[in-house]
Image (cartoon, rainbow, N blue to C red; front, top):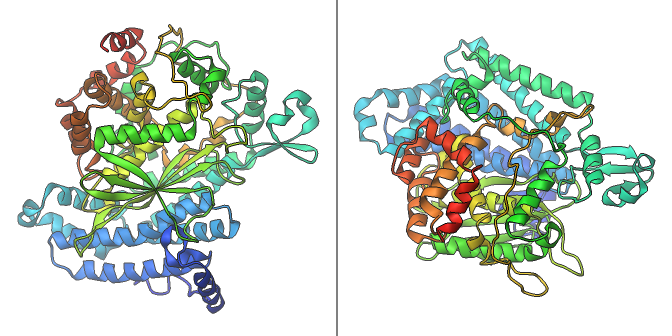
Length: 613
């Protein structure tokens, strides 16, 4: 069925790849084929050949747990290549690698959409789900995964006639292309004649001849004028990017209506905790409040950092020396060891395994269970690297046929400054919080020890996936945690005892600035389309977990083990609300969610927290 869907690898490309393999024993992430850009085509062809065999096997296997295992093997065969390529296409410094990875993403993505409208493949799963005796014999995780695979068929239009199914596939492929185009445009720098900017601020930006290149918002800069200039120039509207976004939104809506939903949001929220746009709207209305208008948009990220620094009674300009990258990593290691019995160890890499020499590989090791997986830390700024903090799944964990567990592999990508002759890499408040946030995702991936890779780690509803990462932000802002590792990089001085200061504003209403278009730089419109509310819902859950389970003692091992057992271990293999109930020992109401968010604005809570020490 899939024969001929992938072009043959040219012989000269194979020869070039073989030469590189003689030089580099391993390719990227230890995948032998990926020692050269041409290897992506080879890896893609292998994945599609394996897919063909698994599809045939699924269609001839009688109803039983084996069907779910085959479907998961099918998912793993495609994801092993697609997930890796999804990272490489935006992060590799070599354009040839990025281009090859992008083509692979498109080809694998096209095949996924074709499989999601394959009648014969769907029928094999339907027969399983219709067999009550067999379904009753399955364990809860296997049943959940079977239903999730069927859900993928349903939202892809499996119920449509052949012509409409083909149209759905074509629309999905078009959306993949538009998403990729939008992401590229969202990270492209803007140039401006350097004479337009005051001379005394030009040094903050990259200069190319007569032009200044603005690559981001410079949100951590203390100079108001630098932040304002970066905001207005970087977010200046781009007609082509606007056309791409409009076409993306239109195509998403057409697809949703074609397969039977009122809007794209109705389709996107199926399978989440919120379930419908109406429920999201109700929650947002309940927490709506009058917002002040005192700050400009370019001030908010900087002053958010100022507030974090003030919590520790430190002048903002003196905050960073206490938070070197090394100290923060030691703090994370200490926290994970106390809560979960986990340690992070630097791992030696093979030649060709990394895409940049400053990437570091960490082994995640449990005190009793041994090696759990690997984290590649791509932390530093470089040319053509997006200014974006992200967690990427490279390989999902799963139980293999031989009984061994396929260890998860992830990448954490940050945009930290390099060390200098006079100082190590020093983190601003925002950088430190983001490091903890992304490490929360990484621990979810490491500890989501599911049988099936389709639901491993962060492969769960979006409005639950952010809970572990946001929970880590609470640890990052707790003095008892910070005091374990924050040391001045020169003197070794610790952070002074936390002195709370009243802050009049915790959220800011940000006015629109003419001739700017933030939405054209908002890359979350791709991965979080109609789901950006997830951060609020996840924050509410994280707030409840923090206050009920960790605020009295952020190093409580018993609570750490409960957190792993009830929330991290299941990935997407269990209904999110059941995981929340297991952790909180109760079923939270909508009012509980809203109150959790509102209470974070209440200074009395922080006072209570300090008084409880």
